[in-house]
Image 1: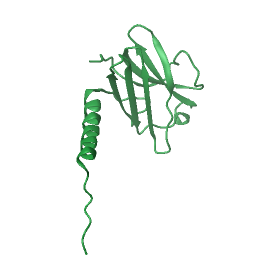
Image 2: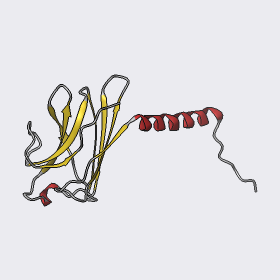
Image 3: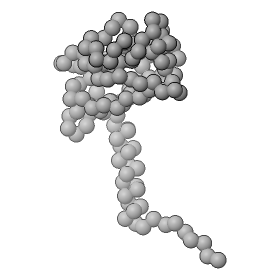
Length: 145
Protein backbone atom coordinates (compact mmCIF):
# COMPACT_ATOMS: atom_id res chain seq x y z
CA UNK A 1 0.00 0.00 0.00
CA UNK A 2 1.51 3.34 -1.00
CA UNK A 3 1.10 6.48 1.02
CA UNK A 4 -0.20 9.53 -0.78
CA UNK A 5 1.75 12.70 -0.01
CA UNK A 6 0.06 16.08 -0.07
CA UNK A 7 2.44 18.32 -1.93
CA UNK A 8 1.73 21.88 -3.04
CA UNK A 9 2.52 22.77 -6.59
CA UNK A 10 5.11 25.52 -7.03
CA UNK A 11 2.50 28.15 -8.08
CA UNK A 12 0.36 27.26 -5.03
CA UNK A 13 3.38 27.37 -2.72
CA UNK A 14 4.32 30.82 -4.07
CA UNK A 15 0.76 32.03 -3.41
CA UNK A 16 0.86 30.75 0.18
CA UNK A 17 4.26 32.31 0.86
CA UNK A 18 3.16 35.62 -0.71
CA UNK A 19 0.03 35.70 1.45
CA UNK A 20 2.02 35.01 4.64
CA UNK A 21 4.58 37.70 3.80
CA UNK A 22 1.84 40.24 3.01
CA UNK A 23 0.13 39.50 6.33
CA UNK A 24 3.41 39.91 8.23
CA UNK A 25 4.20 43.18 6.47
CA UNK A 26 0.73 44.59 7.12
CA UNK A 27 0.90 43.87 10.83
CA UNK A 28 4.53 44.91 11.20
CA UNK A 29 3.83 48.35 9.69
CA UNK A 30 1.00 49.06 12.11
CA UNK A 31 1.76 51.22 15.11
CA UNK A 32 0.70 49.65 18.40
CA UNK A 33 -0.81 51.86 21.13
CA UNK A 34 -1.31 50.24 24.54
CA UNK A 35 -3.87 51.97 26.76
CA UNK A 36 -2.80 52.78 30.33
CA UNK A 37 -4.58 51.12 33.27
CA UNK A 38 -8.02 52.53 34.03
CA UNK A 39 -9.61 53.13 37.43
CA UNK A 40 -13.06 52.70 35.84
CA UNK A 41 -12.15 49.31 34.28
CA UNK A 42 -9.12 48.10 36.27
CA UNK A 43 -8.91 44.66 34.63
CA UNK A 44 -9.30 45.84 31.04
CA UNK A 45 -6.40 45.49 28.59
CA UNK A 46 -6.82 47.65 25.50
CA UNK A 47 -4.55 47.73 22.46
CA UNK A 48 -4.99 49.85 19.35
CA UNK A 49 -3.19 49.17 16.07
CA UNK A 50 -2.99 52.14 13.69
CA UNK A 51 -1.76 51.99 10.13
CA UNK A 52 -1.71 54.63 7.39
CA UNK A 53 -2.59 52.84 4.15
CA UNK A 54 -1.61 53.60 0.55
CA UNK A 55 -4.73 55.77 0.12
CA UNK A 56 -3.65 57.98 3.04
CA UNK A 57 -6.48 56.67 5.21
CA UNK A 58 -5.94 55.41 8.75
CA UNK A 59 -6.83 51.82 9.57
CA UNK A 60 -7.72 51.33 13.24
CA UNK A 61 -8.02 47.99 14.99
CA UNK A 62 -9.02 48.09 18.65
CA UNK A 63 -9.03 45.02 20.89
CA UNK A 64 -10.06 45.04 24.55
CA UNK A 65 -9.78 42.03 26.85
CA UNK A 66 -11.28 41.66 30.33
CA UNK A 67 -13.81 44.45 29.83
CA UNK A 68 -16.94 44.48 31.99
CA UNK A 69 -20.27 45.02 30.28
CA UNK A 70 -21.42 48.66 30.53
CA UNK A 71 -24.44 47.76 32.69
CA UNK A 72 -21.98 46.67 35.43
CA UNK A 73 -20.51 50.16 35.77
CA UNK A 74 -21.46 52.66 38.45
CA UNK A 75 -23.72 54.20 37.28
CA UNK A 76 -24.80 51.50 34.82
CA UNK A 77 -24.81 52.40 31.13
CA UNK A 78 -26.06 50.76 27.94
CA UNK A 79 -23.13 51.30 25.57
CA UNK A 80 -19.44 51.85 25.19
CA UNK A 81 -18.71 54.41 22.48
CA UNK A 82 -15.28 54.68 20.84
CA UNK A 83 -14.13 58.22 20.13
CA UNK A 84 -11.39 59.39 17.80
CA UNK A 85 -9.63 62.63 18.59
CA UNK A 86 -8.21 63.91 15.33
CA UNK A 87 -5.51 66.40 14.43
CA UNK A 88 -7.80 68.73 12.45
CA UNK A 89 -11.43 67.53 12.69
CA UNK A 90 -12.12 67.45 16.43
CA UNK A 91 -13.54 64.47 18.27
CA UNK A 92 -15.62 61.91 16.33
CA UNK A 93 -17.89 59.07 17.48
CA UNK A 94 -16.58 56.08 15.50
CA UNK A 95 -18.98 53.50 16.88
CA UNK A 96 -20.38 51.27 19.55
CA UNK A 97 -18.01 48.77 21.18
CA UNK A 98 -19.93 45.55 21.81
CA UNK A 99 -18.77 43.30 24.65
CA UNK A 100 -18.94 39.53 24.14
CA UNK A 101 -20.02 37.01 26.78
CA UNK A 102 -16.29 36.34 27.26
CA UNK A 103 -15.67 39.99 28.22
CA UNK A 104 -13.87 40.82 24.99
CA UNK A 105 -14.56 43.60 22.53
CA UNK A 106 -13.07 44.64 19.22
CA UNK A 107 -13.56 47.15 16.44
CA UNK A 108 -12.00 47.67 13.03
CA UNK A 109 -12.56 50.86 11.07
CA UNK A 110 -10.96 53.16 8.50
CA UNK A 111 -10.97 56.95 8.66
CA UNK A 112 -9.52 59.74 6.51
CA UNK A 113 -8.79 61.77 9.65
CA UNK A 114 -5.38 61.59 11.31
CA UNK A 115 -5.87 60.23 14.84
CA UNK A 116 -4.00 61.60 17.84
CA UNK A 117 -5.90 59.84 20.65
CA UNK A 118 -8.64 57.23 21.08
CA UNK A 119 -10.88 56.92 24.11
CA UNK A 120 -13.97 55.04 25.19
CA UNK A 121 -16.90 56.51 27.08
CA UNK A 122 -19.88 54.84 28.74
CA UNK A 123 -23.16 56.15 27.36
CA UNK A 124 -26.90 55.52 27.58
CA UNK A 125 -27.35 55.89 23.79
CA UNK A 126 -25.29 55.00 20.72
CA UNK A 127 -26.03 58.11 18.68
CA UNK A 128 -24.36 60.67 20.95
CA UNK A 129 -22.33 63.43 19.31
CA UNK A 130 -20.39 64.46 22.42
CA UNK A 131 -18.80 62.11 24.95
CA UNK A 132 -20.13 62.02 28.49
CA UNK A 133 -17.82 62.62 31.42
CA UNK A 134 -17.70 58.87 32.08
CA UNK A 135 -14.49 58.05 30.19
CA UNK A 136 -13.56 54.44 30.94
CA UNK A 137 -10.46 53.91 28.76
CA UNK A 138 -8.16 56.54 27.33
CA UNK A 139 -5.05 56.19 25.19
CA UNK A 140 -2.17 58.58 25.55
CA UNK A 141 -1.64 60.94 22.62
CA UNK A 142 0.27 59.35 19.75
CA UNK A 143 1.60 60.16 16.30
CA UNK A 144 1.14 57.84 13.35
CA UNK A 145 4.48 57.04 11.74
